[in-house]
Image (cartoon, rainbow over all chains, first blue to last red; front, side, top):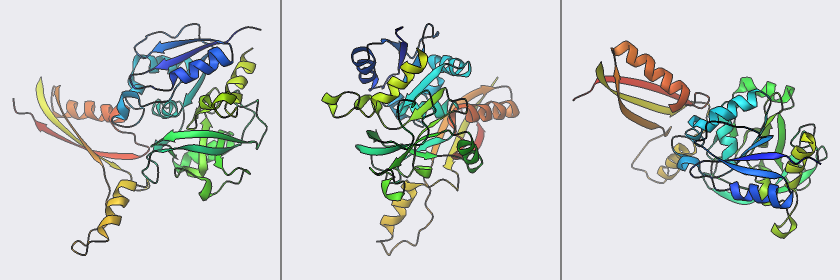
Length: 232
Length: 86
């Protein structure tokens, strides 16, 4: 089987790129390389991963400065041509600032940095990023963020629903979605969305942290396996 | 070219929850000395800009706000343009 070429973007302040690299290279045996933010080209890449961290110290707004870098403009072109882009945590924030995904990630309602396991309900498994999961399947994946409170303009909500862009919602372990299972105040408990075309996804939880049993679970591995399966 | 001093006041739009403002308000409820309500926390950005005249400066700053300094999904802003002291 052909190996997929993953490109993992590194900004000053990224800190989850090695976790992604480990899962893709050593656990899933794919080709993987880091791409420094100053790079002006994006060549021979099948899927771009924008990892978590605190790019540029989260200055101005989370993801705002990273979205102005050389590589971000290439990522935008790449996505607009249909290339697969997955943004995790700070990566999700960067993709909204790049306007590849709708909405904004605001400060958590509690103002706290929240680092804990949460449950997610799979709302769309008809995506290249989630086809390995069952519809309505609940997953246990950790979050670690201070700005994960998803906010979107009212006018955009209809589109998100109509185009099936809501991929995961925060729930309890049985899949019940309500305020008590919403860790950060996100609108409609939204934890992950895609763009209309479905080739770009952003998620606040960290699937790379639960992709091998040794690290406490396998619930996140399906994201990466879905991408690989859909590209081969 | 003239040199301008630019000040941009950025505030969360009304429909966005501002937990920082709420936290300030909440703690002040314990203090009977202040009858202060409706706190909103924003930010201020200052810089200098070289431009032909006031109108071109305004257009440049507006473009910079829309493309980078402000996210209009959640923020509103006011621009102040003054002549910079050399």
